[in-house]
Length: 295
Ligand code: SD4
Image 1 (cartoon, rainbow, N blue to C red):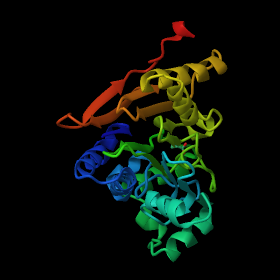
Image 2 (tube, rainbow, N blue to C red):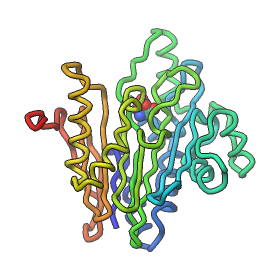
Image 3 (cartoon, protein in one colour):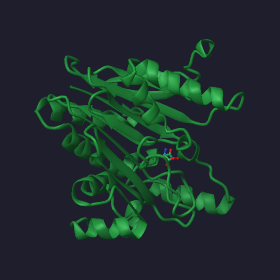
């Protein structure tokens, strides 16, 4: 049993994951529940997740979320979803109850409503913090918000099932309808029950061009440790963009042995727990954590 989450604010989700895994719950229920608590918490919205997230340039919060099990074909996602404070729960329903894998915009909202989710007015999705930031954005006509958080969470349960979830309100003040890397399989997340799983965070407009989560899992399949795989994928992106400054990207990975790894182009805290550890640990990668001499 093990769990890993992106950024420091994933700690409560990884702690919840730890207690649910220790109670014998399965990885998918654990990821859905642990993520939904963070999504619904207005205070963590400033980390670009769920309720309290930053709106698009029209002032409307639009969320992307996805969940993927390691078993073949088990994936569900929503994108540009409005008014629902726990988008990862809707993504789970897409995986379990829809013939489709990814629903967007109004269609995703109608699907959620049909399954009993309450669609809330947009004002409920904003916090004081993000409303103020939006006013400043309108006055200055440019975003004063930098950084790209996203909640990514991977859980490995007692039976060896591995599930990864991601959730974000996306780039602050984005164009309405903009979708990032998070709900795209292979980009924001990927899982294979014979190998492990990975998740990405950062500038999704760029991340989606490289399918980094799929790449990490394929390298683990070929024998790399999670850390080697994450580092190699980041190094490959850096090599491909040559001398250009790398966009913001953080990667986490967990294999089915419960080993963790990460890589990042910026300072990147993440949180981790595995069976035998008494509590969740925070690890921090410093910027430029790639050894370029090996590439
Ligand atoms: C995205 N990777 O939508 C996500 C979250 C984010 O600024 O960081 N947005 O691009």
